[in-house]
Length: 171
Length: 274
Image (cartoon, rainbow over all chains, first blue to last red; front, side, top):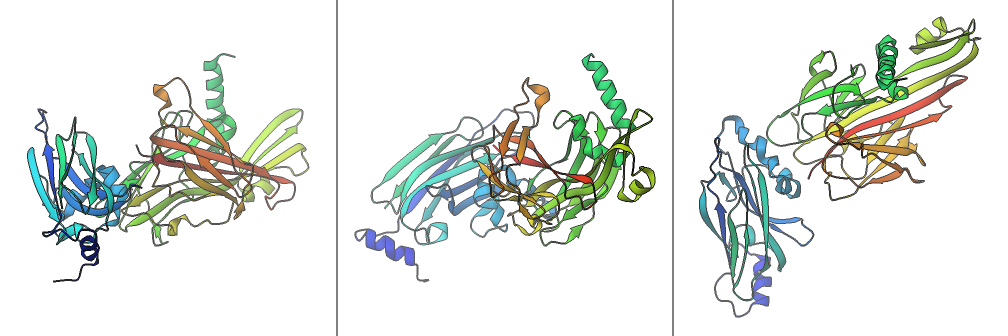
């Protein structure tokens, strides 16, 4: 196993924690009654207090188009694009994936691997942004502390391009 | 004079001018601009289409196509890119270019031209043209001869992926804007800072006009005027998202031609995102 300095910090803060800290995230993509529906592009990332991006957790876009044409609309998730997307080379292993259908999508991230493994301890926002072709854009954020010292849940409700959004942090 | 009659007169005057001079149409209160189809782009090798026009309202082509002589497109690595599909229609010029590199592109139309006024046989005479034609066509000892060299830059910036600064380096000729805030990183809630340079030196105490586009659908122009500080710096607090026209000009005697004034003008189109 790789040596993970942030884990050492986490362990120092949380000597009692036995398992790895984790975040369970629920993103609801609403069912829309529209004549022309395309699944939204969705980005999920960790934001610092100054709104800079600390980690990318998920980016769902049209990954299967010829000549990577789906990348053309990544900039429509304009907050994500400005904060982090424009600096990235797509695709990103373990982060990017195809667009998803309406419904509730549950994602789990933990301190052992993936984008949270190197996240320094601190207070963050979890941000989700959705942008839909011939549709609108919506952004939601919920706060969380990393690593969590106690079980914590935060939720936000979208009104147009997103439905329920919640994060449940477990130490 | 009725407003309609005034418009007709202005139109007739402008149409009578040689094409190159239309760019100095500031005196007629028209604005010169280029409008890109997008300024922030993602994906592999995206294209940008540009409209270029001279008009009163922003950004509507309603008066005259902007001549594209002196157009240069600088790529993120500093190399030059050729404009494609150039065309000129009744109210606008157009061209395309492809963003084959990641980073920031600058598209600029630069150039200069002379204009002269004098009296001959009791009648006012006006002339516009090149430096070469000036000596040939304008009587140097004319009565009340006033000559101005117009030096202009009209430009915009577009970025594919992450912005960079290579194409933003000043030429140190005429009036230029050097961004402090990157011109493709403008957001409505955040003030932006830029520096005006005249021949590469900070241009202080210059009035910069900022006009948001879309005035056809509102009553007020909503323009702002700010003045550059001693270091040439100025700050813009955007009224909201959208395309913005910013312009400034400086009049001095540094035309390099004896007895000829210089009017150095700068125009940029900047997109502010929500």
